[in-house]
Image (tube, rainbow, N blue to C red; front, side, top):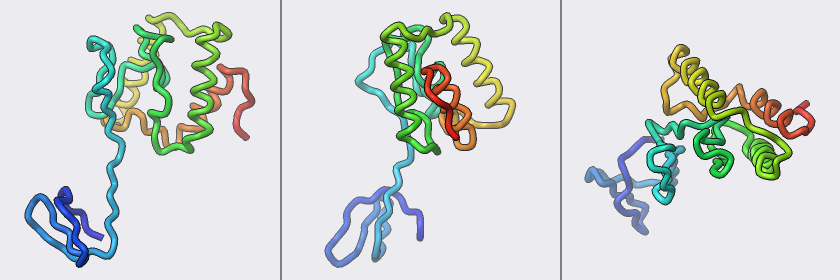
Length: 154
């Protein structure tokens, strides 16, 4: 397996041409885009930004405090088991929109976000890994479940 520049064209004879001018014969093309957040359709007057793939500021990866609960993001975390987590995020949002659950104040949410960002920085974790929950995903899911009144994971 080799990493190449962006593909320019692929041909019936198995040759693949790249933008840098190189050409290879390939049996398989594995195209990995990764996670690159971009919301060109979303106008928040700078309230929500994407900086080095950090969408923020977001309380618990979902709510921008200044626009909550009207604007929410489902599915930003990565290196997770996605569908159970996204279901819990959706239940949390539904509970907030139906007034069954309350958010902390905007100030408290911003303090939580600042503390989270400080923890990442102190741990040497780059901004682009803000939404990489990996080993923390189950703790996060349990927190969401408690907010929604759902059972925590086994």
